[in-house]
Image 1 (cartoon, rainbow, N blue to C red):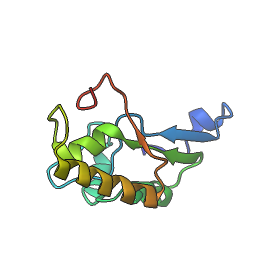
Image 2: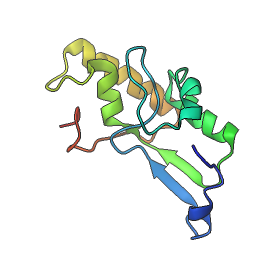
Image 3: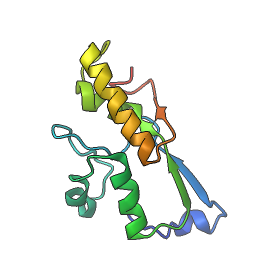
Image 4: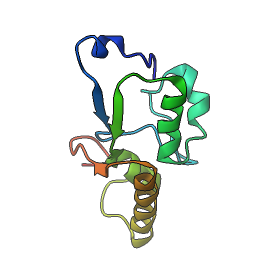
Length: 122
């Protein structure tokens, strides 16, 4: 997102990048805070990423050298339905996570990815 040329990777022969462990910058919910990993000059644009595909489209529009693929971060998924609350989701929260995951996979996500040492995934 800072430099789509990814020269440090491309010059080492890295031609594909798989992202999405634990967290992804999209989708952004109405109440979700933008993660600190988004560069400042992208934050205004990121506020409109209500679907996973919006983030992927923004990277393509900005120009990106490597092949990209991504999982939907499980922390992102949970936080959109449950905030940072730990524990079991309610039936309505689970239904919301299913809806978001379905939309994200339609947009190109490989599936969910969890890093179980980070809240709210723990």
